[in-house]
Length: 122
Length: 107
Image (cartoon, rainbow over all chains, first blue to last red; front, top):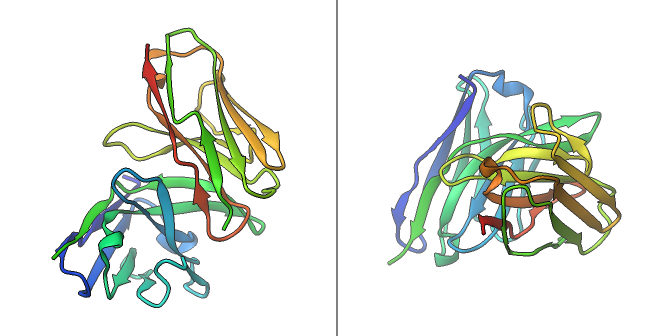
């Protein structure tokens, strides 16, 4: 079954760390660029980080740069998001997503996980 | 960052109605725009990509158009299963950004 399943969310105090995982199954994980996307309560979607299929290219949104780090282990078919120095405003549902691209053009996300909730609160 | 302004935020319509949702970008995005449908507890589903290309398996009552900074999603004749939230996404440049969403409810 082709799917993405996130884990690792929970309640954490401001300033602490958390690592999210996204387990991929049913497809060749190493062939796809991957994203972390989040949605805070009552707000729209925000792309947080991107990693290319070979991990050679990484992108982090300004809002998380220097605090969050995206990585992947293609041998384990797993995507990660290491979140440090968490803030109240990082509270959101975090989802991973797979991109569809070709010839250097990014077209859309064709596979999304259902997300894991991160709550930053003292 | 490219801002996407989606309108309306909320839309009430009846089965059989024709509805249009607009997504306006803060700068040109060269038609690198996708539309998604999302229902509660279910992952988003892409409907349209490259502004006007219908994703395989999506009913032909869905269509997309536009260029430059203004894009539209049209549902020609609403069906009961179409009542959901719709959002746009620009893929022209990092960071990839999304519209705020349009919630489509039954009148």
